[in-house]
Image (cartoon, rainbow, N blue to C red):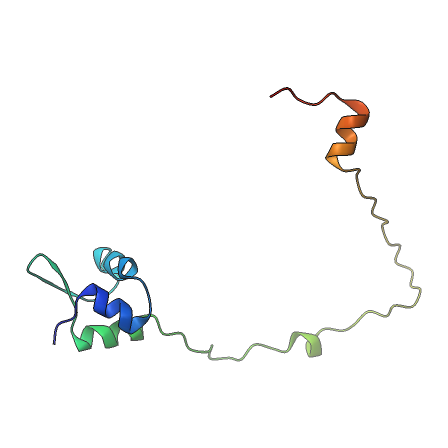
Length: 101
């Protein structure tokens, strides 16, 4: 059976535009019949395989378990104290005239 892009989009739960765009850029398999895109059951199965994501071969390390934690007790590291700037509105009122539109 041959499917139109709208039917494929409904099956894949995506937009018809996406299906046509992927076919136009030759990213998915299709047949060009009668001046329009047509898709077989095999094409749809291949599209699903192309966009399938599988877990990595090596599972990611548990970052929390592998990273030593720093203590919160007073250490020799000196922390930098951050200071917030005044908001733009306050700076404009205090030092400059507003821009004319």
